[in-house]
Image (tube, rainbow, N blue to C red; front, side, top):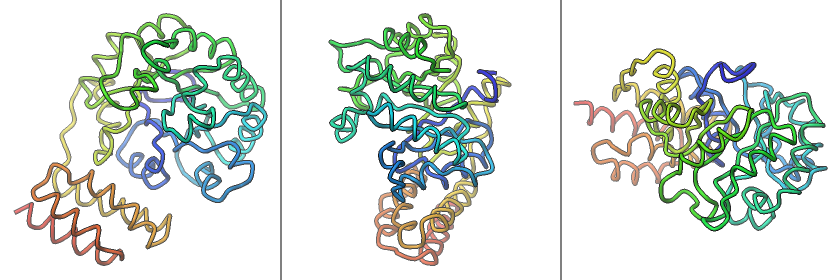
Length: 320
């Protein structure tokens, strides 16, 4: 396998506001795949900010979870590493790739790709503070004039990272354009620690192709799982067995959607859970008949009973 204690080559990409406990529960129920929580800010964890603390607290989840941390202080990373270890983290991932403006403006996320000294201090501090494995997720570079992924990867290795994940886009690209898997292959060739490749993995066949092309040890999948929680397991199965699993039926999609909404309500409460569910509903039905009309109707609902009734009625129509 990839390395000790991970039993799949397939990883969930941490996505803020998406890869929460309900989403991880759904993905785990679908089968194999390594689960990563949405990023938690180290300064907010130290203050025990309720939202950030909830994100980092995975000790009651019956499956392993990697906790991702974001920030700019080596000292706060050390403190946060100790805390998330107590909160049940399987390992710790350091976010040095987020391109979101408010993160970058705080000299965090992908901004750290411009400051290798601070990045190295953060990695060392985190590694020295915990017995957990520490990984780093970063990008191709800041922009096309400042591509330093290979140098950055070597720095991560030199400072104690157990493995690294590289997204094949620059910070300036955000999530636009195509991911550059050539640079991911260069990174893989430049270090001895395991490398996970990230960017535009949307099917089992593409995942296998990228592994063969670059030699990466694992694949990370993000936006493609939205509305398709079966994908991680499908990719895992294909990589292990060479067989494509059947796509879920419309009935199976309905049951998974209902389960996801109920988990959101249980975790966040009815009002917040229903509000959060609206984006997920859009992803689940995006390719279905009259999906836009259904989404518009769904956004007007505020109770679990209403949502269940509307979903049952909608799927009854499209299954006929």
